[in-house]
Image (cartoon, rainbow, N blue to C red; front, side, top):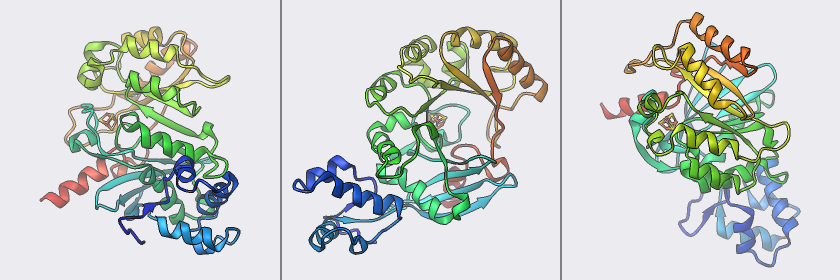
Length: 350
Ligand code: SF4
């Protein structure tokens, strides 16, 4: 990797940036380069044989290639692999690859740490160190795909790792455009999901970008007092403001939002909660994922008993919602968001 300070990482560079740099190049030329890099995995401009020698030299003068490096990987009994990735400045992030019969999903990070301080989340304990660049966001998919076999290649991506994606909106949008562009990574917008804790202003900004990926809202409570405690961002964007925003969000036909609801014993798992949840979500096209909490050592929270989780689900189904119980993956290898990076930092600090 040549990281000459005058050069820019090609990974993550947008089509607009390339057109601005090479103003006399035809658009199809830029698509050809994207195709080499994102489809054929080429990391050497001199091998892009359908470009002229001059173009190849110009690319080489301005760009280098860098993706996150796999620092460590841990295999879970459920088949998932948790990757600890090192960035160029030495910062550590994590991504989790989760196979199922029909798909291979990668959960990626958008920030080093997070500043939103949700009380059930270990990433919050890191604070926000910095935002990831578009290169570091899509670079997670590229680095991990290179580590996997062809049969294991990533089919779906969820932005649910470390960080609040919409708190790093510009690079996330750039990464999404490259991920879903037919000349770049070619992922279907149906197979990409961005999760948010509910930054209403940013959701409104995001919808103007016209990228029709799936949105998952991490709700986790049905009254403001409880949500303020679990997710302090609720003080700025209370539940009603968030629900109004979702009601006005223009969805494509046959699409719906995902509502993520982490179940915490004695906090948000009662039938009254289920009742309030159904009331809030009335009129919002959505499916509900119920996620029994994945407890970690220093947490004050516990998951509810299975019976209680099933009762909560039954109530929602009785109200005609699609409600699913999602078990956390990779729990035997520190599977919850932020756990691996937080443990690594703890290790390096002592
Ligand atoms: S749950 Fe998400 S938004 Fe909340 S602190 Fe953790 S990473 Fe940040």
